[in-house]
Length: 405
Image (cartoon, rainbow, N blue to C red; front, side, top):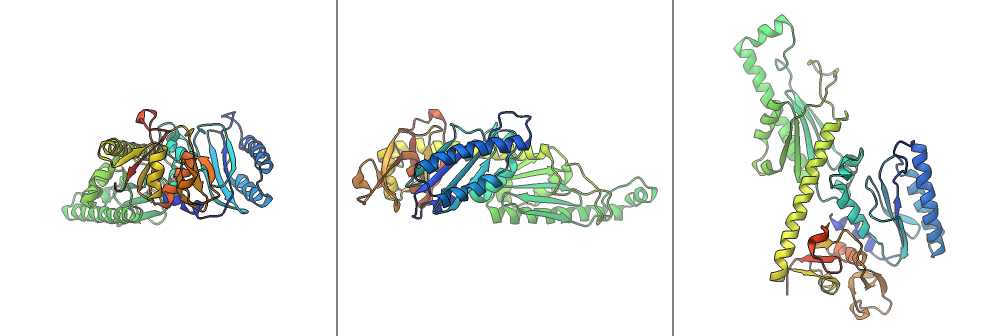
């Protein structure tokens, strides 16, 4: 996750309400109304707790609006909300099962470590099969998820290109002579070499147009994955015309999306980007998950190698020292919340550590170590990943450094 996404949460202000609502519906076959009722009941309980611990009415009312507008549907889900001073600074609804019971805190700093854990869970095999996981991943492509993607569904006349920033582009190329229909005239036309040559030229031109759109989408989003589906020959032509630098990012899917008539085309049918295709969605989620796993694996290799060279550290004291010097390149967290706590300067969250003297203020806050380090890493422009239980972190935290002293 690109922690710079939540950097605005640490620009001062506070105290903060950090809310993680369990949006999982007990009855998987229940109605949306039942799901809404369960979510409202859980928020009412969390709201009462926040009010009893000092949260102001304006901030609670701002969260009311987010909860009211949050999607409520059967299945696993979690709603994360961060609010202060009467406004919501960040919220996200994710189709994941919460890793711990719902949580509400009123504290000097936002508690965002569980947000990172939920984002990481979205790329796992279980979470990415949720019906709305692809939509969530598309949103997170703009707002935190570190795996950005482009998906193209192609045929002989063009195709549709969708990317993780929400953009959708339809390429409608020349279809003259391309599609054979069961008429004597068209069959005879295809038997003439010049018409067959014209069809092939149009097909190649259309493929080049799609490749250009894919390339532009990759450049715009810095996509890590390009999912290519559709007609097998069209996929081949598009892939041949993509920039060579993208070769290692392309994942081909042996699947053609169902088509429907299109009034602007002389051919009988056309792929449309608005059509839902569960198979293609699942393939996209799988490609995103595989890329996320590869990222985590590479980060762990860097972390372990760095422990011997001094390019990595672990444990609260060492990671906090690196945070104070803005040396964290990648923050590593355990899947489970850290039991350690640290002192932190609420007005400058990069100043933190086991001792109050580490903070440079006479009024530090006592916060969970992982939540405090998320803020320090975000202000440093670092990335964050959640690693497996066997990663041998100390106190549940570790860091890959930008440089060593």
